[in-house]
Image (spheres, rainbow, N blue to C red):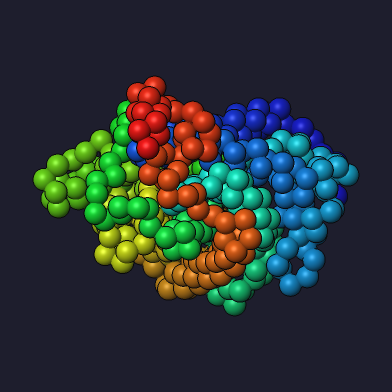
Length: 436
């Protein structure tokens, strides 16, 4: 093993990228917080902040090791005790050693991915999940679902070059289409099904209470996402530049496509649609950020904007209450980005290309990469759905998942946290209580 050589420029770049990705979770708190009703905004934001504490601790104790430690056999999981507490590792064992980035910086960067992934799930359970149950779910889900799937994709496991698709080609997931978005979207669907719908779902309006919060959250997510995608190169180079530009382009195009879809369907282009289109574009370009050229990024943005705008209505058709459209945006957007790599992947404009990967169908590579991407996406859905369903059923049978009807109607903020975001809500709730 070569002696580690610190690259201060790349290290500074990765520290900045890590900080940007961490900012995404408070940004998500604003995005989700603005979308719920005023009586549950604090609870919604607390779920994101709670994820930082729980997932961050798990990652430092055994998460990094379970993902990037030595494989325990069969590609299922890394050794969670190899770097327990981030001890015992040298910089030449860093995930980013080739870029001259120290071990602790690499571990910190990856921690922010675990945090944002579980925080994304919370949007599916808005207005009705116990806060304590959410923290317990976060701890168990990160351990049982996120860590194994991250090992499969990034740690040399089942969905890597030597995994399920070894006879086809190497899967491409530059920054987390499967590990983060398909995973979170699937988990959100499961929790929505197990918890059941909010009281009044489909019968009464449940409009966002603060659209400026939603727009602010989308802006913070877009800003932080440059660290998410460009930072996944682990170095400040031309590949990071390609990922940065594709992230800008696909996201802007997805926003416009969502707005156009709204205009045709509903007659109005809304601020909520703009914010949602931004997130859909960010999600879809994530796995493909360094694997497609300009035209691929544009195509991914268009498809994501249109399909995600249409997909958010599926909950009303099928009756599952995905409160803040985690399924429609993250599961569908993640699938769009992951599978369209099979059409648009090209090594012509980037020095980054994983060994064994092939160009997409539209770039002369045939259907091989498309088949690989589809298999990986389906495997991620199957694992995440099954494992999350088991976790949810166990927690429901033991500690319970859902708040009381009284707390849901009166507002989780006041019932669970003894606070309200807006004083008038607190006064109103107290008046109702006194009258009863």
